[in-house]
Image: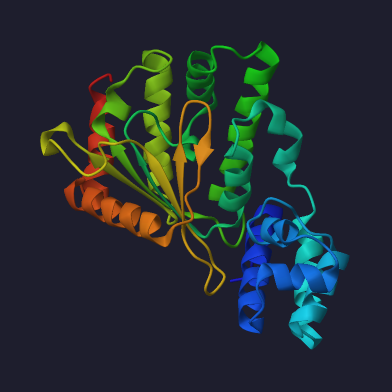
Length: 286
């Protein structure tokens, strides 16, 4: 599968490659900084994603690390791609800190595994449901900001239907998500029907976690796990809060949430049972 052109994902890969090459060279950051005439904090910022290096800066680093040929050309091109702006960049002022980075990584992912205890996942929301959620949660936002947030959420949904390689989504939804009347009965009927329709797609799996299961591993809150198509690209977990989003890079944290998701899948209804549950809500006037 061909890599997807997301500047955020390219930047994540570039910073990992620069760190790997430096370690492989046997040089510490201070030694590299001395060779290229800068400070070790600059090298640190390159490797930790706080600064996006220019292609010329990458070329100088590659000279120090002794990288030539096709690998050198690929990494310099990666630096060029990482400095481009995704479609979401124009909306960054209205998005919570960290969420613009998540959108860029989501756009490059091949698989999304999401657990949601409160609301329908953004990629699966109808426009009416989206607006109802945003109007209630963005209590300090101006009307224009609400409109922009709705636009961003609707634009992200193209990942589900794009030609050739739509993102694979496995969603575990707590029963509370489906019982909560967001936007009123008509909006909820439309939203649940949307979930039924999406579940018919080969790239979408919806699992309902019923109240009857009681306590479970996801009671601390929602989370998203992203898997990428590039070989060796590590999975990523995204934790969303009211005013910001977190993406812990510690592999043990990612492993922990992966195990949690497995626990949730074991307790959730099977896919066909989940669809029957959704249809029952529509039939019973939920």
